Length: 419
Ligand code: GLC
Image (cartoon, rainbow, N blue to C red; front, side):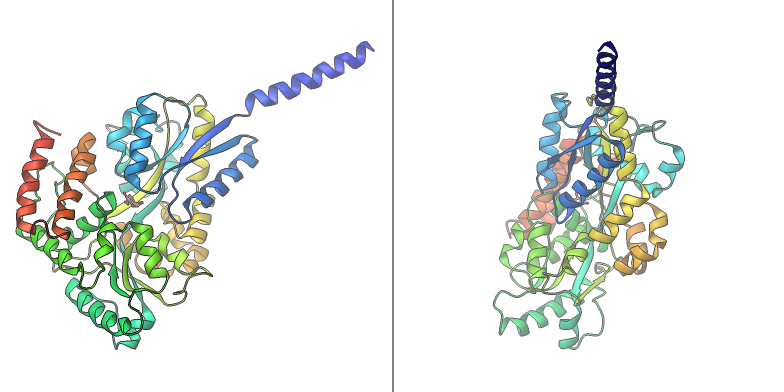
């Protein structure tokens, strides 16, 4: 009898100790396109491997809404979320709330990522997050319609794009009233900042604030870029484009109702999905030039561990796992989420599924950063001032030159005595 009791209590002790070491980690990841599903699957693989549990915290679609929600959690020093998915423009805003991953993640693992993205995640020497996927704006087009209307290649300039879009739209609207020439992100939010930065840079109009922190927005090329985009509204783009985010634009393109679309790489995988009306009819090209260069805004998401997390070691392990080569490869193949690991751009399976990762490699490596580095914790205010001004130009409330003149004053006020 004594023996049996001893045995039972030993088993109980083993169970108790394994329970004590297994933890539950809450991961806040995105929900645009296939993000949520792929996040869940990746987290489940880690949970299976480690015996831990992962709870997924569902975040809103829009990056601005996510930021608001995360700032509330972090300001309250809440330990509810252990791992956050962070936009590439946030490290400067949120760095104080995240664990320094330098020294906690092996250097060779850190160095496997594109250096520029690691730099974007480094604030005053602190590595705030590990890159998970990168983004760059792309021009999607309908290969079948270009052919039908006698065009042999994707447009190289915005002028060319607008002419092609108009011709295709006029033709298609004869049988489909809902057809649009060009769809993009015209809603007043961070996505519009991304689109409009591409117009600016492509016209040689700078990046709002330069790398040294000087306010450069008040210039004729920037004004011209904004006026050009405004001329698309109600001509090649529906009036409703000023309410579109990424998913709205994708919905229209994927339903077969647009000739061209500006979007991030994730739209590729869904456009090739079984339920897509444009499967097999999509081409991807660099966004057109406004006379200066082709420009794609650098986007992308990273994983950071909250300093308020009660399980930091396990949280770091989850981040390393998700940002590692095996997981980034699965995400690239299943969701066209661009790896941040250079080696995967030579991976045959990844390239077979996403040929443009290879053919447009330089678009990804030369993508232009928003001025979150120089404007530091004030980036969000600068971006909001910018997207609001752009929004006014798109809706006809102001003209390009008036908008950039006023913006320069508004941004100077935000800057105050320095960033
Ligand atoms: C994408 C980008 C992100 C950007 C956002 C804007 O998610 O990866 O960097 O801020 O779009 O909507």
